[in-house]
Image 1 (cartoon, chains in turn blue, green):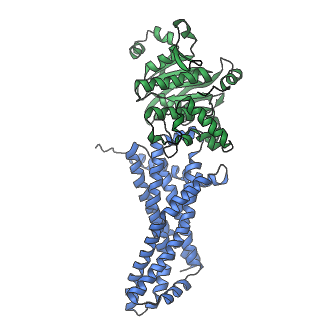
Image 2 (cartoon, one colour):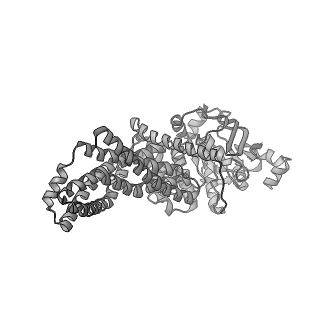
Image 3 (cartoon, rainbow over the protein chains, first blue to last red):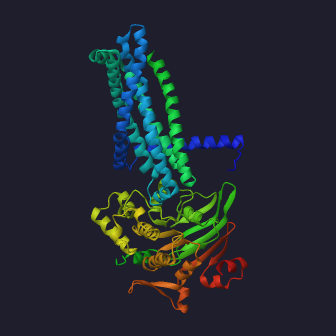
Amino acid sequence: MDIELISPSDWAKQKILAVQEYAVIAARSIGNLFTSPRYLGDTTQQADLIGVGSLPIVILCGFFTGGALAQNSGSTLQRFGSLSLIGQLVSLGMVRELGPVITGLMVAGRNASGMASELGSMVVTEQIDAMRALGTDPMRKLVTPRVVSTVVMLFFLTIISDAFGIAGGGVASALFFGVDFHQYWSTAWQILVFQDVFMGLAKPVLFGFIISSVGCYYGISARGGTQGVGRATTQAVVASSILIITVDFFITRLSMTLFGG
Amino acid sequence: MASPPLVAEQRIQSHPPAAITLEFENVFMSFEDKQVLDGISFQLRFGETKAIFGVAGSGKSTILKLALGLLKPDAGRIFVLGEEITSMPESALFDLRRRVGIVFQESALFDSLTVRENVAFRLLEEGDVPEEQIEERVREALSFVELENTVNLYPSELSGGMRRRVAIARTIITHPEVLLYDSPTGGLDPVTSNTIIELLVKQRDVYKTSALLVTHRLQDAFTMATHYFDRAENKMKPLPPNARASVPLCFLILRDGHIIFDGDLKSLRETRDEYIREYIS
């Protein structure tokens, strides 16, 4: 295969253009909410695909992540004789950090790839052009319903993941460290304050937007036949996963600055 | 067969015969470093079909996408049904596109929708068309392409020729005033190609629709130039030689981004241009 060399200025221009195109898609996906037509049927269908479809993996991942977190923190806490804090630690870890991030990454792997491949296939088979030619705005019909449904469903999936994560931590604590489950549950519940819940629920809103807008952007800008669709799918998962982890760092910092420690 | 509606008669009344439905005025278009269209100008009159020829990559499909506003030219102006579309925002173009139809090279049917949903797509999107009317118009459009029994099938269950016919049905369901065909017979066997050309002739002669036809097959355009659609017998029939001049069909040949020929069948046959003579031989 020939390797095409590209000048640094052209490379920079391409990247800036890509950011500009992404910004336009992301902005239009939000802007379309304020004008008609709105595609409620398509939004509901996507919510079912994204929300209900992702439920099993989110429950399983949440449960076992909580369990693993309890095992790791439990052995450390045992050394200092502070095993009673295990519920608080798992609860804070799940609600503030692991619940949103693990759910976001799972949904990114499942749905950002799905969106990129579906829209990419529509681009390379001229279905997007056909839609425009038939007088329908693909941004309105395809992108906005995906963005809205991902944001809404990721919010609720994260709450479910948090709950199962704390439950998984409780089961692991009871099984491996003999912690009383009721005591675990009440400490896990009582430690949570507004700041933790706010941070834990603001993240999925942003992550949902990242997953759907990135997935749709790579799909809409797919070029080069089936190979291009495959590339778009991979790039969508990689980019959305990196963005989730990067944005998570900054929201955590911002939240701690705003609310303290 | 569905009886042709009054669309053709209405159209003839609202458009004088010399009216221009589509016009390219000094249009330039390039992709990366390649100049595909280098200042082309042409007009499409009401009721006329213009067959566009050129080697692969000569900008034939680009002309169709420009005419529909799917692409914006680098320079020049394009008029569709009296409106200048080059400076139109996308939102305004969506309204204009309801009056213009396109049949894509590979049909571009929505693969997750059934034939019925594909054909009814425009009506379903309008949102205010009663269900009974949608059913009736879907039946009428599918009857026009003789595929009434495929309503519940998915595009993947159809042959290539059937997909093209469904794409034609999807395009004509709203009776557009201008039709754009992008290689409608490309990759099809001669029998199926002939069926498609018969539908194009039927559309031209029954509905009096203006059309741009991009094709690689000269015989398709020659068939269209030498045949008419007999409504009584519901089939395409050859015209006597002395009546062929009345057929509203023109030829447009592109080369290196320029139009090197724009005229009727008679002037095409009489041309002395070596390249064109070789092309049509």
